[in-house]
Image 1: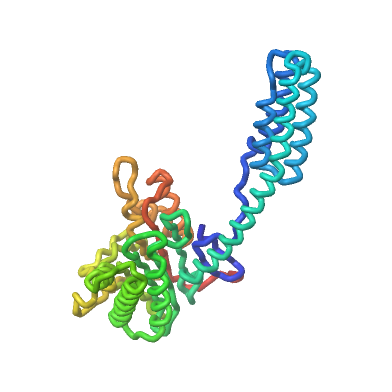
Image 2 (image 1 turned 120 degrees about the horizontal axis):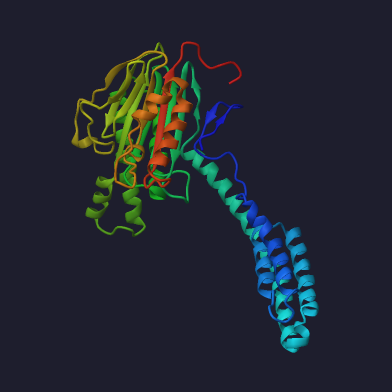
Length: 397
């Protein structure tokens, strides 16, 4: 998850490549073990026990885990083993024609695993192609973030609640501009695949507007207008497609769409960090003084509801000396619960890892939140950790 690609210096939430799931060693040995067990049990008990069932299970298991060549080999072994138990197990003498019918059934089943294996491999190839196309589409929605923007060191982590996609309703972005490094993290109302269009629209707007908007309040206003415009256009399209039928319904769809977000700015000279929050959860600062929670004095309304909040919109400033770490996250991190319903708190993980840099902080918090939630996250999760160094990126990165 979120590998650091040293060749490009990029951080991405999506895996760099897709591989066939690793088969456990016991599953690879099980088909051959079943054939051996069938012979070991059947041959010493002439006519009393038939190993056909074990032979059939071995052949079917091989079709699930082996390559095509190995499945053919197992089919041959199963056919030969069936003949051995038919003659030396005295089934032919005891059961006569019934034993022959049983062997023919076993033979047909054993060789039917060959086309089944071909079908499995063909479906996997199609799935791999679809996943590769999905990865590129998801990278277009959430482009990779550079690990180093000047002397600013960044790490991101992302997990979607939907197992069908690598992108959900959370978003992040980072841009190096003439005003400094600007960071965005947000949470679209809802989660999963339905939120992806809104994520793409907001991230695209931020990546462009961050370079041309002088102040954080103006940038936030620009993003708010973009969210409002997008949701109204989306509602109009739904109305045209027949998903909503009344004008009141269209307005309702637009009014219900919003994005909680936090925008941070680290000036080129460093020394401080500015944060503007629009209905988003708190951030955290970690340094020699300990871990401090950054609760916005006026969190404001989410993006897309700016018409209800004429302002003024203000940002807050905190000291940010080199080496300190800023954590921005979504509520998927802070609202993860354990079996007793206790929320996850990142302070302990921050306190233990901030000196090792953003990637270590991100990995530590991701590991701890999974342990806290028992490995199951019910909401999308995104986090950005950032620090400013006095020397910049190490040589070779």
